[in-house]
Length: 313
Image 1: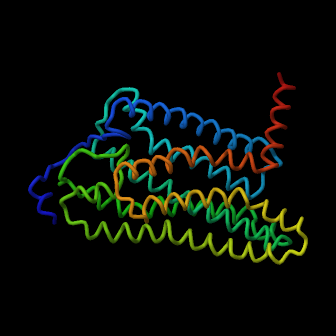
Image 2: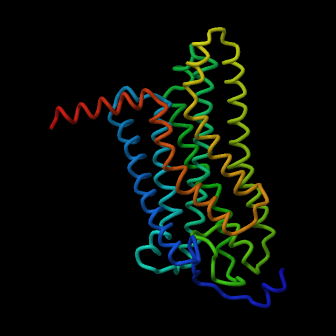
Image 3: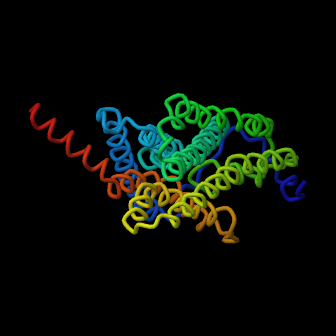
């Protein structure tokens, strides 16, 4: 154990979140911006969700996955950013130990589910491009429901051992968290309890929820690129690449931000907060725009629904 931590140990029942910035004026502006981004995220992902549900032309495996991704893009920022919004509205930065661990659990669940779901979507694109003649039989409704169910339930159960271990911690060097959310790494570094088991669980969790999905997604795109390069027609290559361009953009954006946040020696609280804010706020907001702006089917479906509502009015 760290001697300084033991010397300043505290039995913690609640934490104080410092938020995005220590400067009140900057914190207010950033919180207001986060609030606007959150509203845009809700509007964009709800629109995608409703389009997929209402338009029969979008009742395909790809958009079934996209529908679930939109749900996750609503849940994840809600869990990650709600404390910023609470502090912004009420000024109350107190969070109980139970609420803090609950945030760690649900944030980890939704983030892990998103990575697993994106892996399933990469498999869907791989089958569509590499084996188009058998696409409908391979990606049938049973397979799609199974992949989505696995994405949700696997990460729901996988995070439980980590949270059970965290709940056993009560000794901390301080109850002040220099962040806008409860983060497992920050809590681990603050505790004066033995963290060897938690370190093992975090490593195992990272291997299953981050590295494995990345590896499977990478393999899918190696096969996709190899197939596209084998297409003789330039038009055929462009059309094939277009079918996976939105997903590739989302995957590249997400994994790049994760690498910058966790695998590069940035090391400052300020940069860590900004990267966490980018992951929790901006990426869920950008995803529906990426899929709508780069996808003719979504834009066409939106136009159809707008015409329908105009005729109804």
